Image 1 (cartoon, one colour):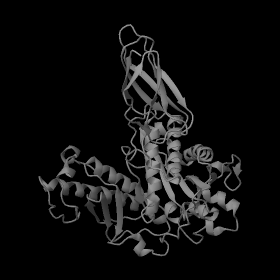
Image 2: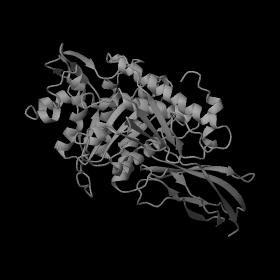
Image 3: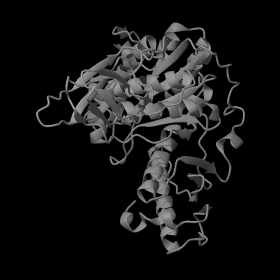
Image 4: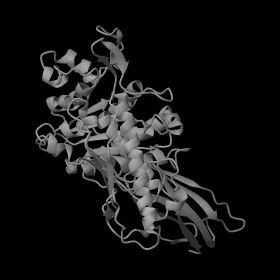
Amino acid sequence: MKGMKIAAVAFACAMICAPGASGRGVKAPMVTGDPGIYAEVIAMLEREAAGQLTRHLQKSGKLRQVRVDIRLDLSARSMTINFGPGYLPGPEGSYDELFLQPMASSLRFFAERSGLEVNDIHFLFEGKTLEDYYPEDLAVPMRSARKSAPTSALVSSSHGYISLHPGREWEFQRPAPLGLQEDVLSPVYGDELQVLMEQRSGLVVHRARSQSTELHPESNLPWEHMSSRYHLKALFPERADIWNEFPNSTKPAREKDEDIRARPNYANHLGVDVLISLHSNGHDSATIRGTEVYYHRAKAQDKPLADSIICSMRELIRAQPGYETFPVRETSNPGDHGENRIGKMPSVIVETAYHSNPDDVAALQDPVFRSAAMKGVEKGYRLWASEKACVPLAGKAIADVEVHSGKRMEVDIPLVGNPQYPIQIITTNTQCPPGWTCGKGKQVVNSPDEPTRIGVSCGAGSSGTLGWETHVLDADGVASKPVPFSVRCVPG
């Protein structure tokens, strides 16, 4: 994005009245102000996308330039990227999702930095979707019936070692530009999530990768560092359809493609009620960061689950000291990941943070962040499963009260949200008449079945007004903002 005038285009969104315009041969949109700013942003996004594609093709030994057209529909908060002749990813390589999804993240980031709000990104290839070219392979399988009371889940912590052909060298699937290896990190997050889903959601949790510290006999590497493909091969040697979908491929990294499919194949084999895939994200640009959750665009029924998880992650992460402004997207994102598409059950991908951004790398290695992020995933799932809305914890107005001197009164502390019990109701004094002794109080509520109340009292012979503020702190560190109220002590 060389030469991009962020300051100049930051207000472009406010000037646009038309729903969108084509990137090539841009027609002047209906705008107030300078329409050239809108066209400039699109042109820069096109250059960025074309540059990324050229570098990607060069890595695979192809030297060519492919035209890229971009269209924005601001009313739908969507971007359509159309590749010209010369680029059509296929089944081998998992339709280039490990390239296209990071491209989508970066273009969304640059568009939003320019003031254009974008959530949904579509890819076209000479005007057609990949589903148009590969209708059978990219068809979404029939969804399993949703149980009224889910009992099981598969937690897939990616990625792990794969073997390259023909030399059979072993390598991790993901780069580690700042020294943090996703293939080793994600299982630690999976361990935390598994315990939470077992204890708080009451689920039987399966794992896609081995948790054994013994050596994998073929590679002589720890089993816990191997990808799901080899774990499933060991479990089901006769079920090559689960872990060996491309036996005749000549692609060196074909086992990476098989691994992507093996995880949802295993979920389908188990018949679990939900598939949650854990990743850390990565990008060539170190400026892109934050937490994202994806569902498959053809499985829009999974969006409520993804939205509930991203909402709960935002609440839990930002409740922790030092993470109050950590970037977490406001909504989930549609995508075309194979993990989400192949799973017959509700399936989402959680991109916890970017291992290519130094601030995110520090967070990913912090147990406080890890615990909050995984508590958010579990809570988001649990709210979705119980058909509850994700509502941030907040206190409601507390009625002012009048108490006779020498008496005590119970005061209701109404709240909204879904706190983790036990909760503490913490009250501090804000106004104390001269000569009075005014302290603070803490009331513990152990379950949602107990009333959220505190007791207030006035000393014998007292007459005056006290000011108080009350907030709620739950077991996960989520706090509501203080709500003021007053107590007027009157002669009794």
